[in-house]
Length: 267
View 1 (cartoon, rainbow, N blue to C red):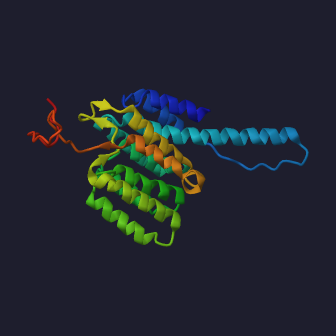
View 2: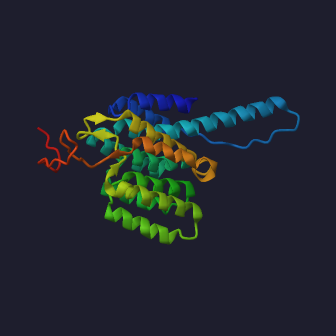
View 3: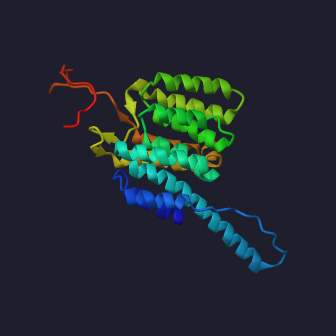
């Protein structure tokens, strides 16, 4: 339930860049939760109930931390400065955080930079895709797909080709690589997973929800995505939007229109 509370807190502030809320999420990430196995005598129901309660509390705390990591990305994704600060926090979490937090960081990077393959994020995910923790590697490869979705990014496509050769004997990682390759070439480059319009002025809540649905399934990748609930990937469909623009006249005949292509300029 604590994980759900953190989730609601992040969703309510999604795209606002609320610094105080991000501080709260980072504070949650600094706590230490450990699932310990205690020896309980047979027939001692009170001790067994107490051990079960402690285990449940620790599991709840771990889930809350993973959600908090993703929540930071949800709140900070709207503005460049906030995203950069979040990226710096994530590098600290990767270095000093618990294993569960490290598993959530690639998923958070995916939300922070969906369909926007920045070099530093790609390099971080590329390192994590060779991690000794298999769940971190799974999540990093999937995140590479989300970050490059619909961009046909040549550098990312090359990285995924090399990963496919590296993991050719590992069925689970190879499945992730193929999934990421499909996302990078989404609609042959005519579709996107980015929830933003008009230079980040408008946010599609449905698209954010779709991204989040798939990302949360990856919080327990072995049970859900690599188990029997792989259909949870279909959440991404609600985030897919066209990148191309086709103009027609009132008779639905193609109409050439002069447009300016390039980066928006701050006025």
